[in-house]
Length: 336
Image (cartoon, rainbow, N blue to C red; front, side, top):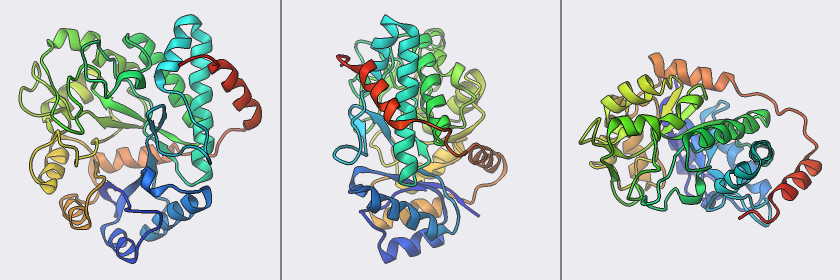
């Protein structure tokens, strides 16, 4: 039975040791990074070999947002704009902004499906504030929860129309963090009422999306110690409760410096808090093994949510790709 784990590979092709490890560990899914990407044929061979190693049609994820966060890029794949470009269009013309967001996501899905990737870590529902760390910055769709949620929904629908599952991130919000959780633990001291009307509010309209990713952020008004990823209070009361997210919840990468303890301890704390699946990236081989040993097979509600998400995978809806690319380019001309 698949383990409550999403993991990665070191290079452009699986080594014999990686194949054996994946066969034994049986992670629920895999994630692709730039180091895994060279050409379309190479990437398709890699994703095929990942699925072959576990003997099933495992989900394969990527962070393909556009802007600063784009694992597949030129010369083989188009360069996509950051989320803020859709926000700028939306502020001029609401329908144009939503159409551009849908088209961009639909075209990204076209690119991903062709190389065997069927999950994209989008949309972002983080609502940044002016004094926050720039880690979110122009990745965000706007500065208000209503605009962010509306564009996020369009992005999710574009991905789904292209046969790619969306991942809602970073629940319950990374926009107010004054540190980059890749490097340090962000602590947000904003009161709960304000959080509910701003940060958390952008996620509530998107709560039915099939997959979500947590934020490694402490919200002192709710849990003064643990970041959302490892906080049972945050997962139960805010993510599952206030936001109403009952789909599969994965952690952000547990190797990020925001979390404390050994990687195995981080994995166990993540699952104990109520996350369904641990995401572990960029680890040495022995670290991957330690994390896998800490992650049990999917069972109970976690398996129910995982199965429900995968049932939503569909063949792409028809698309005139050339016409869509022309329309998308025209809509984004002159938008930073």
